[in-house]
Image (cartoon, rainbow, N blue to C red; front, side):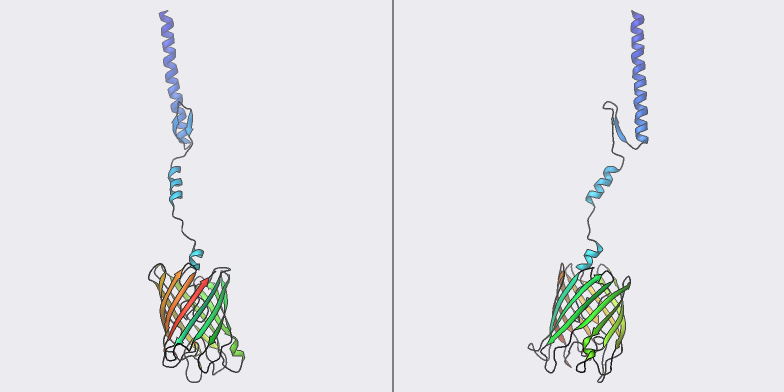
Length: 294
């Protein structure tokens, strides 16, 4: 009897020892496979690999930011300028509208020397054909003494490289014998930072003599052939920007309030020699504008 009890106890001890070793071996194998928290009693491993919870938590809490393309649509300097193409006040920016994005705008101004009853209205429409090409059309209506409504003109901007574009204004009035404008072609380059953006460029006016132009200064007989462009915007708040530019003839400065894809402009254009914006000699112009992307 004693011998039988001794053999039973010995068998029980061997079973416990060998079982512990098997469980330890299984746990080591599972750890090598990348699993953890093996429970020998349940006989099932935790199938979650180390670091997986941290990765899932980071993905869940990661801040979702709008894409660069979406941010561009509501950017402060992709709205229409007074003369038409999207940009600052009178100077186009190097940015283009997004693909299949439209822009419609209107700017109204009066020369300070003529009073509020002497208005000029610029209606414009721009379209982002694709990520590298934008085109538009502008029409001016005026009640200024001695001036008639000008023929519409067309504009384009083509991206040659990142932040570098070729642009132009093609004026249909240059085909007629009355008030004539020269066509303008320009290059522009610029950069953006979280607080500001700037654009530099230059180009030429082409056409017959004794014509006006949309860029560059003029003398008593003709518009300047070459011109220099510069523009900048400064972020004052999430919705408000200060704008300044130089179109080769005069300086302009103002404010732009934007909410989503809608913007309101209030600008002042200084005395100019050229008649690109129908200025009256000796007076600056106050400009109010609305612009919308859709």
